[in-house]
Length: 62
Image (cartoon, rainbow, N blue to C red; front, side):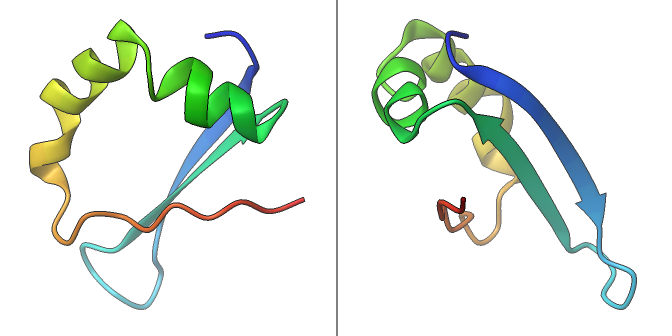
């Protein structure tokens, strides 16, 4: 995907079944528009969204 840099999935040390997914994008727009409005996002959603309980919070950091 345009703007995608890297990602890491980390398991919580103190709580079972808790993870954090860190995804690095060049810009917020690359994620919100380029990815979230793409056909690839629809495939991502179909494959992975049923694993989320509750649905993850999306936040942006510098």
